[in-house]
Image (cartoon, rainbow, N blue to C red; front, side, top):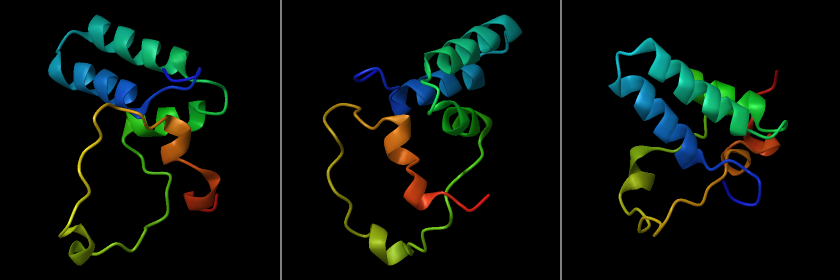
Length: 92
């Protein structure tokens, strides 16, 4: 968590736990913990990420844009809200 907001990396960790275990209880605990940590304005986006749904409209980025990537971040820092701002969501 960062300033009370859930980091996207926390959802990725929960998703990895669900993927890597066959134990139903462990899956439930991981998902419940991730969902419980979300702030009210992050719940819809967080649940969508955990279920594998994209809420964003297509960005139209082609492979050429991926030729030169920026260096990776030193530590996780993106929050759920930062990767799901209203400006890039698909219209409902």
